[in-house]
Image 1 (spheres, chains in turn brown, purple):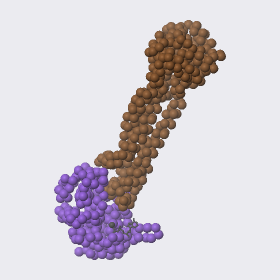
Image 2 (cartoon, rainbow over the protein chains, first blue to last red; image 1 turned 135 degrees about the vertical axis):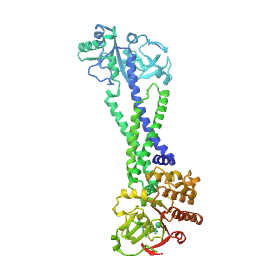
Image 3 (cartoon, rainbow over the protein chains, first blue to last red; image 1 turned 180 degrees about the vertical axis):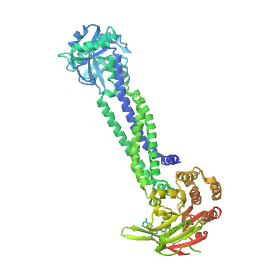
Image 4 (cartoon, rainbow over the protein chains, first blue to last red; image 1 turned 45 degrees about the vertical axis):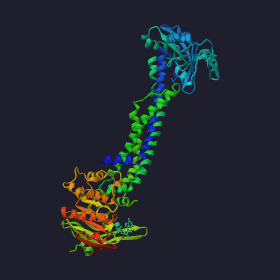
Length: 367
Length: 240
Ligand SMILES: Nc1ncnc2c1ncn2[C@@H]1O[C@H](COP(=O)(O)OP(=O)(O)O)[C@@H](O)[C@H]1O
Ligand SMILES: [Mg+2]
């Protein structure tokens, strides 16, 4: 019966109920979309690493994977690495961030094919000159770019020579030499990482150890699987902190919305609370009623939020597939629900206590 | 016969005999409105027997509602003693008074006070639920019949006339099988026809079910339906 009262109360002021739930829902959507975006970016990076086909990465010594500074490794290490036993190919790559969340990869395409195998072109073909640019299918689709078009990036005009499938290094591939010149990494020649292909993939762990001993901290060898496992939220403290901030903001917004909604509801329903008290409802019963209303608001908000997050994902993936890869994060659904409920419960406390303490006679006299 | 007497403060030491449904001795209530003290009740003595239908009549501001609220355990008195069904209200905590309201008192208000979001049926069910009863008492169906609201139970208060709302409120008050039905100006908002209907119902309930009723009114015609009438003026009881 209490549940019925709660539902009827919410139904009776359904506009406010809906708006409150909507605001909570927008919060839930923000959480899910941001988490989905960071997971998507991580997944994309992991897939690109995998897509390169390398067995081992060589990176600057003691460097964080997510350092955005480019050109940390001297290119002169490449021949040394290439002549080590079991190394079938050692390909230098320079990675330069462009357009906020994506990067441009400088590499010699013929060499790269020794690691990746033959590259498939959806359109066009390999670069013929130093100013030729390969773009991936998402970028091409989102920006309606075709072969032959000129694109300006890093203050330089590039001619699009081909479109390749997504998931190979990055969205853009250009000749290494030109990218080094443009970014001041030419003298002495510097690169970001070396991709290594082994003649026998079973020897990966052994080879990683060997290379690390050989290079003595100048360069760090890391196996593909170890490298890919770094692309998770837990290995990135900054991302964890960011998610923490978003969570706190969501709880606060949920709190404010539910607080306002419940507070007005309590004032409006002063007389009804007096009736309930006259009928023998205890203060705890009154509090219980309001807490249930708040929880229902949170759950409604959560459902709306799930719907919105799917909508947001669809919109983003339709219009901006190249810039924002959003994935669905079911792991976060219960967490988002908990966040919504905690905010709502906090918001219900004060109005609930106010109602519970309300004097029955004054409440009944309230017009 | 009259039980409303002005016997003074010494009676307040008496113990309830347990025979009366309501026993009041030396009851005072003083409101503090700013600097002024309003003496709403100035030493009220009152006995209501089991199964009695008593009307308390008095002009506006005479202290009727104050008495109603104290008897219903909604507010504590300033001084004096009240026994309800043999239980001294002075000894009760706030939460025990709430329980007493659940189990012993049925309220009928001038303004009906139904919950607007619930149907008539649910208003009644809620009261039953709050008093921890699983089912309406035996004979409740006949009470609904008598109240003439059986075909109105699916409606919300908004869709009921004043008279219907008040009859639903009476059903709500009776669903807990209260020892006492307390009614504060139950016909105050009704036209003559509906007033007569409600008053007839109260009298029937009293005669058929031996329901103890204490009705407060300022209207002598309404009071005439009761077994006995006492008057209140300036917070003091007088024989009517
Ligand atoms: N909460 C209150 N605070 C101050 N004065 C009150 C309050 N309630 C009632 N009174 C005063 O007490 C007196 C009796 O009021 P009430 O019991 O409501 O009378 P009645 O119901 O007979 O009209 C009146 O003078 C009224 O103004
Ligand atoms: Mg009154």
